[in-house]
Image (cartoon, rainbow, N blue to C red; front, side, top):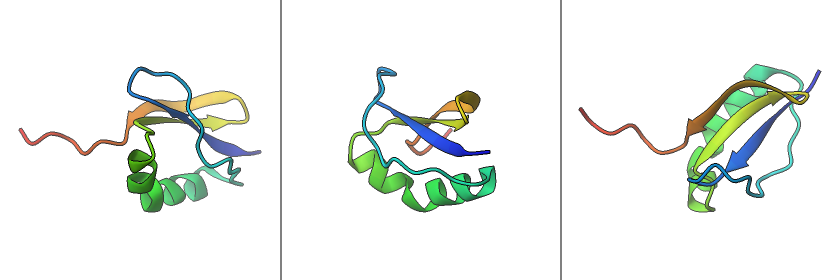
Length: 68
């Protein structure tokens, strides 16, 4: 069982990001929680969590939510 992130730009095109594999979903989500700002600065606009090759959820924007 492995989890990894798919990185995409604002148009939904895949972009290069850290090629990391996590043993469980919690580890993957914890890593993203720590590193999302750096990913955004490097050009990643959205991510999708993959379990092996199946999508768990996403795409999810890395931009902070707009105030209402």
